[in-house]
Image 1 (spheres, helix red, strand yellow):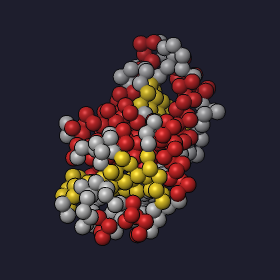
Image 2: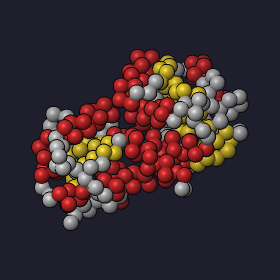
Image 3: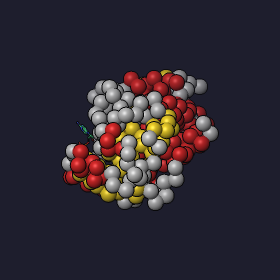
Image 4: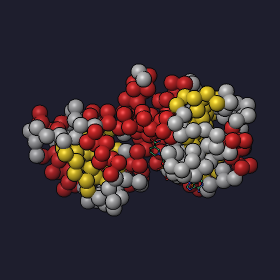
Length: 288
Ligand SMILES: NC(=O)c1ccc[n+]([C@@H]2O[C@H](COP(=O)([O-])OP(=O)(O)OC[C@H]3O[C@@H](n4cnc5c(N)ncnc54)[C@H](OP(=O)(O)O)[C@@H]3O)[C@@H](O)[C@H]2O)c1
């Protein structure tokens, strides 16, 4: 029986990246729908849950993507509201790669250093990836500061993660060299989650910093988000600190994304959101 993946994208142009990884993760056929949201998904979900006998339902799955995490989260909830009894299929949320990128990143960081009671700073943490990174770091026991150029945006992102995952994050406004220096005071873990192509840290912010132990930056576009690191850094030591760059994290992120797609087809009742994806990432990172 063919493994069919229905990709619901909240954007108007569905992601090629997610389509390629879906095939590489084992889907036999991927159908992409654009502009899907909580109010127009029901017919699509019905088509997925009614069409195959119980023992074959695991061969149909749903992937939710797009650049708007709030819309993706609402869509995930709406999809599940259409499930009843065993009329369901497995579903995965990965808006802008948020869950797979965050899970791979935090799993690698936690392999390098214990997060318990550490101060972690997620710079430009208001995007999909940053929100999930901050949440996972907090779940791992870190005291997390989430920065934005605008205080109201950092407050909104922290509130959203508190509401969904019960974590407490500290919102911080950091928009220039001085405010970034203040945000980094006493920090042991520093994470860069800025928009692609943006430099967030100058070398002087981190190279001689007294307390920073680990830096990770996910940017893979243009130059790295932290001056003085390489995108290919993978647990590289620089200035006495462990460094992960965007491509150094990206290898595990891709492997994880493929493994998650494979897992979707293992049963018809998986819901792959941050927690479950992080569990898979931890296994993968620790057996690397
Ligand atoms: N390595 C990998 O495998 C991988 C996988 C997926 C994504 N990524 C990368 O992960 C990063 C985060 O992705 P995302 O989708 O969460 O990001 P995003 O939503 O595009 O941007 C994140 C935040 O960057 C801040 N920002 C925007 N312009 C800025 C500027 N000029 N200066 C400083 N900050 C600015 C914004 O925060 P405020 O407006 O609140 O300040 C924004 O919320 C991107 O670089 C993406 O390419 C990497």
